[in-house]
Amino acid sequence: MNSADVFSLEFDMLTRTMTLGKVLERFRRADTDSTTHRQMLLELHHVINVHSRLCEVAASVVPPEDWNSWQGLLSVPALGCDQGGSFLEDLRSLGIHSLDRVSLTPLPQTIALAAYAHYQLVERATVGLVGYLWFFERMPRLFYPLWAESSRRGGIPEKALRALTAGALDDELRDQHVARCCRQIVRRPRDLGLATQTLHDTAELFATMIDAALQRAERHYGIAPESVLLAGNGIHQVA
Image 1 (cartoon, rainbow, N blue to C red):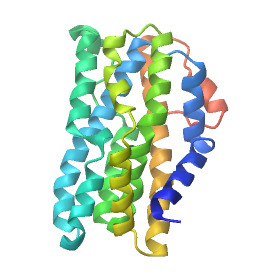
Image 2 (tube, rainbow, N blue to C red):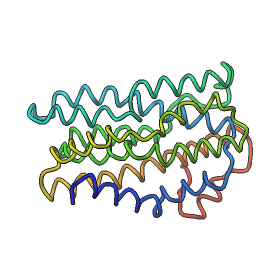
Image 3 (cartoon, helix red, strand yellow):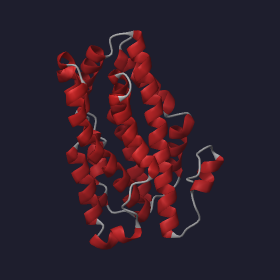
Image 4 (cartoon, rainbow, N blue to C red):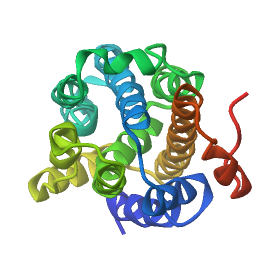
């Protein structure tokens, strides 16, 4: 079994367990209002901005013989500048003053998720970053449709959901390319173990960020916190 197959199995397991599974269930059963939608777009946009700088760091620490494969992984669409621009377009479609009701300062949980990638790249074995990048390859196809449908139920117009619709599309050629890159970088059982651990950590950090964004939006919106329900299912409150 190759590394990409292992990552697929691990990701599928994570979607049914731990914090990520509980966050996904929240979007299946609850509506997303405009304030919450904006806040999540902003948090993900921050992660994308940090990723562009991460690519610059990678160029100086990745072995030259592996650089072509790493370039393929680092170009993950969910973290690309185009996706970040699409998020901003969706925010603008809600009106210039829509940002008055959300916080533009990234959450501590958002900073932690972005910093984790830099930590893997610089402080630990570089191969561990493969799990982080692979998570963002697979996450949009599962999370974005649930987010979009929850937002539709909450009255968000389609013009503010275009980035999610585009980001959720499957790309078979891209999948094949990523699988090849993974096989070229993840060569030993130890490498696979490190990358799998990073996949788990990234899923946990991502879910924690989303839960924190929900709570922040609910505090700004002045409604009963949905996080009370989530906390009862094992998702922690924001300090």
